[in-house]
Image 1 (cartoon, rainbow, N blue to C red):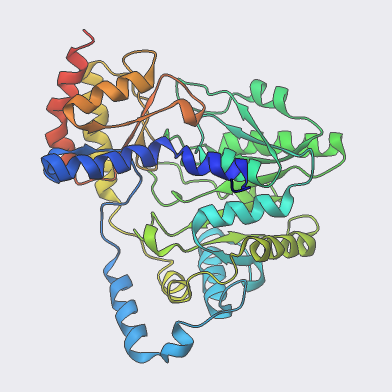
Image 2 (image 1 turned 45 degrees about the vertical axis):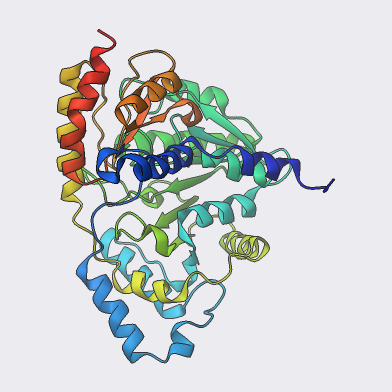
Length: 396
């Protein structure tokens, strides 16, 4: 019998509930027709990329030397692309970043993996707040770290600071935040980030070592609040930002993102070298070269994100009228209502009777809820509402 990694066998055999629902939907669509399957499982943007993206791709393919266009770049990314990204952030946030603050990656997942691998030493703990993206646990444990979860504040999914402080320890290496949040859509206010930063400064001094803040920001541009989204490094110097263009530019399959390491990070040179070394170790050197160029040239653009706000408003109002408790999302494109029975998995199985594909919340660290991904055509939501109503009536 083959001698293989038991950890990797387990990961490959037990796929995420998000992916399981997505794959079930494809099989079901082949039976009943895709128009009859109401798939709200995966965060796959439904609006097209900005027109400029297609124009630039055509222009680059036609005009550039194909050997250079499709060839390797520097391991950390094309210099001109990194300079363009720095200029964009400097213009938006009044910062002074340069190309050497960036490490380009195959999306935010690769960015997180590089940062976690760069930081993790034996015995290290990484804190995050429920509900959280389930792959955090996979990424952290794969580099030998331990995930510590701060329980959810389920009324609005904001930070429970007492619970947070109770879980900090001398073993805490970093805290991961995700705002706007997947799966709840919660957005942290400037006041929340200020308080979080104050605690991290105080605890870093108490423990005698830096506690890093990892800001996972694939939904940065999808925001519905009147208050501007805080730029986290302006609040806390030891922040590393993991970003993806998958959502803002509707390019999830292009796999392009970055790690930003501001020069203000303590021991910047060592941290940057560790991120580069992690990319080398994991085989992530040289993000997709064509889309390095495209993302950098389009970093000031977004898809038509107003469609997601419209979808959110329809769903929140309609589901509340049906008896669901829904905290209103401040951003991203997910709704996280409470299940109509304590067992969210059982609820999602019952929803399949109506070809409603929802994701139970257990793997997000917050049992009793369901995730609805509303980055879908508005027409799908409108046609699904009678199905949701029939499902809700079973619980009356």
